[in-house]
Length: 212
Image 1 (cartoon, rainbow, N blue to C red):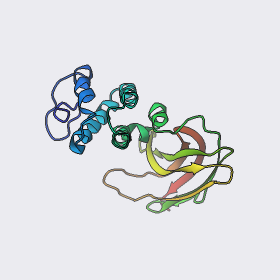
Image 2 (image 1 turned 90 degrees about the horizontal axis):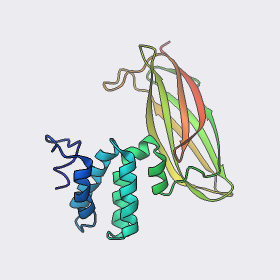
Image 3 (image 1 turned 135 degrees about the horizontal axis):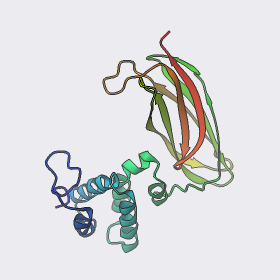
């Protein structure tokens, strides 16, 4: 029932039911003991999240309060349901997973390759510290130059961890810029990397892509 009524069904024509009509199915099935059922519910929730994020966050919060599903399985369902929203840095989704937007972190970052040849890699370092211990989810967004002068952004996952007074988080990333990629083409010009912690932007790094 959950799989066949998904709004963005990848393998067949979807059933034309509204979110309001399908949510009662999810509400009834989320406490099932079978993983194939809860996986389907989570996939359905991820579909809805691409259309109405707030409904998904609210429903998952309600399920947590009800306590009808085991804690371990509901945690898995929550992460799987919110995977698209987490990648987008949705604050409500991150809060539900325990990543507060108000964490008192200090973020220092520097670009190691300010000029990058087409097909090489851009490298950067990040140092994150905090006065109190807290969980952090670190992502980065690259703003790419396009041929028509517009900009395009993509989000990339970097690290889940904890920081604290005696527990800094030091990260280094080497991001390969594959030339002539079939799914994404790179162009010369200025590009920007935004460091994001728990859905909040902290630092912007600049680099240039060149072909000579």
